[in-house]
Image (cartoon, rainbow, N blue to C red; front, side, top):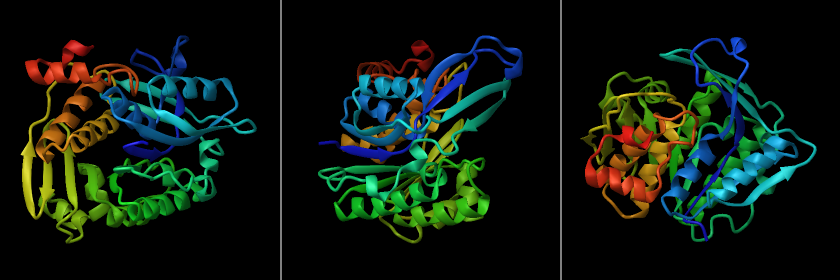
Length: 319
């Protein structure tokens, strides 16, 4: 049985390795990506058992996605093919070195058609953690209902909820995002938020106040605040602890860094490591991912991660 489960959408990603307007390039690379599958692959490469629930279309893109995730060792028994539907697409445009544009083509995609009726009765059997993002509830009403029902079933089964807000305003309104994501915050045990996400969800500007607001006064909740190059913050029992980030010399593609962080953090939890060690794992994985093009290409294996930590070497060596 899986230690960790997650539910989401994997898309076919198209991107170049050049900076400029997408319309000006003839050559474009084809990759796969999606917050929940990125996370699943990150954990699978570190030796953990992960089950991923999704839907793909009966097109070449869906076939490639299914083959790729299966080959990574993720349990895809709940990734179903809907022949009559299409697989979601995503285009990355590295407009400038400091700015990337994302274009979604995922309306009415196969994954958006998931509903509570698709959730197996034994999905959370012997599961330790249920990873939830703010993306899946944004892609359709039925997916939103699915996520809330799944959270309820997971908690009843004794699984802890790890929540990564993953704000995507191109998918829904700010009002919908605010209301829905704050409901998930209330139900979660671990909240992994970036500064902008925490500010949006709490209407607070000061970090301690953000963390307090996200904790809802519940001492058992753990808040992780990701702050880019600055140290990550752990808020537990009203106390804040700083964890230094892993610096890199070159950032090629920042998309997927948060998913990698979540995988590294969960890796630590599964090994019964301290929160500081778990955040450190997350920082290492995030640093690895941003040095390669694509959402999953830079995710390290367990041996690679152990070597990085043991040698305290610069993560650039994994490029």
